[in-house]
Length: 608
Ligand code: AGP
Image (tube, rainbow, N blue to C red):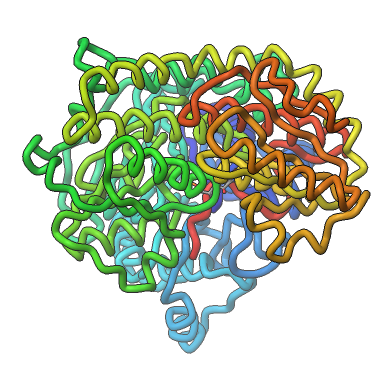
């Protein structure tokens, strides 16, 4: 995915747009560009990060009262100046930034080339300025409606016309776009985080909508039909204003450290009453319909899939409902069997992951009741699901998911309790589980107190080029998540593995150069895990074991220990993963890696 921003009505649009791009950089950071307009349009582009664009813009001396800007995560064509946005018409009078994928770009490009248009990049996006030119329309909105109406796929886009200096046109379908309304200045961006410092109100564009923005006005239209729509203004949410690093060196560390509060938000408003039933008023099924749910299928990707895998244990053990988890792309293409009583959960921090969106659409088409478990309000998955359960974790900006993951797991635990109490779970068992769940924020606080010890251990092992993470039961997905965290930010090979699976092949890779992180918490199955640790030690693999409280079970093993508080098998995944997040963070810092913007990655994957 990419980040786009637009600004009209500022004496220094360049400064605002560069700042907005820095806030959007989590969405992609391999190249960047900006068009500024005074009388003429001036464009500056570069391969590399926004800081490089800022320097180039400063030395160009270009200023403007309006502009559009882009930070890219390459999909079509390598990260280069030519492929960076904005893309322009040959005469340079129409400039466009785009986020999304234009599925029919080849066909459009062939058609436009036949008509004499010359393309300068390998991108799908470049068809947009040429379509605008080709429209033959004299009104910019009419030209935009024609051009966007021709696109298949997803887009969020902003357009400047040299001939119409008083306006900017925006449109979106399947990619997010938010307008920001200020005082004599209006903005647009892929994420409200980019706008929050400058505006008092926002308007979230819905799929298939376009906007005409001037310095003092904003109007909404449907792309198909040019029908005027009422502006849905809302105040900027407080959390969007709190999007800085707060003194931490990286967003990832900030987001790890703010987990106790983020997790408290996951409980807010859910723990009323003494019946042991968390409240989920947003879940639209009646108690009778809920009791009839025969199966839960979770579709998700990456960390969200690991949260879903943890939820699978909760749904089966606590709610007594058969559960499975599908990689969202598999769900989509495997023609899944969904009975009328199947509940489909789409778990996604961003709510914009292409494969998970497609899974929701597939489930809706097959008549299943769909629940979007999302962090970003009003995101595509939230909007398209039958009901939405929000995490309330606040914006997550580091590419590596931390607080969203633990909030997902906690929310799925509460949701399983809600479903369980609707079925066979007794009031007493429900209450006991609720009390246990309520400890989660404090369990995490306790882990964070030991951050320095975990840092020292991470430094000790930062030489490793291959690591295994092993777990079982509810901690098996935690092992997968720990390995994902390490590999995505440190570029070191890390593999999550069921501890019983190790000897079915992966153990062949173990030797003194391959440390194993073993999740040996005091939960059912611990005895077996101790046996698995012995197997690793017998192959000379150094072992770092996560253990509960003052457990002495590994004292005679001579292994390094990470201690997390004593907790049940249901809450241990959260506290354990927090320790693994810290380990990954300090390991990657020790190796000098770019923590918040790891190479080749972007915060959400809006392509298949
Ligand atoms: C997590 O650290 C990753 N960056 C990634 O796996 C992520 O969880 C995945 O892309 C899914 O994103 P989503 O939750 O926004 O759908």
